[in-house]
Length: 308
Image (cartoon, rainbow, N blue to C red; front, side, top):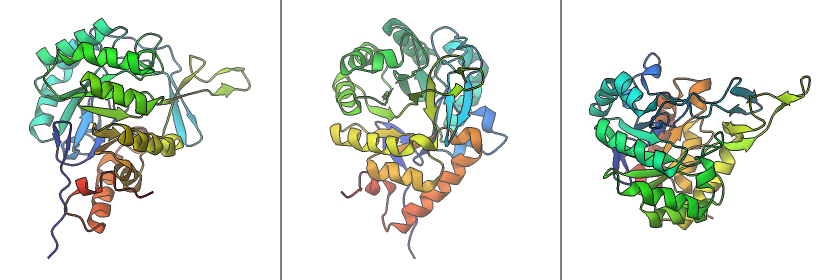
């Protein structure tokens, strides 16, 4: 009798029961999806990014559909770290106890704000399996991609927050200069990287002659960017030894498998949550079937198994 392969993975010190999670920004704080399925069966969830104080985000309209994708200009609207913990801390604690790794994401307009957010998570989020800093959001004018676009800027943020947490530190990279930035954040003390974030894009309403969202540009996600994301994960895996949490247009187990073969330790489902809310467990089931078909004892044996 052939035993089922092990699906458990380790992302830079974060132990996951399986390699399928959800990406920040399309999954709220987890409980919003409990009506669709038991969220605890996922390997991880990455919470919506939170700043030291609440942010209102950008004006509406914030989202629009484009062929094979979605554009958003939400601008990291969030209740602040304290607001998150007060409202959802008990739920997240229970979710963590049931085996789903909860990754808290810190955002800021300045390095000092990133440090403050990480300090607050350290103090008030004992359930956090790790902390991710998002230095890649294209929809805010200060912080985000403005800091993560260069190796020097990215390393500066990572070095500043490194001493403020003993938990695994993830860095969500912008889809630009990925190999260089990955190498820089590794040297600065990161334990893992997440990629990719949305890609800056533009959509014009030809009748009003205006952007279809509140700003001229917005971040594109969904199947339209999947092949680009696979390439960037492969490039990052070639440039650094950091484990990778990959995301970008995952709609099936085969999409997730591509990322693992390219060098990702685990994957996070993003836009698909908006289109097909129960897609997380379906993708996990499809990925598990694929791993079983590969004749391996563990999914980890397939990480980076792409052959040129």
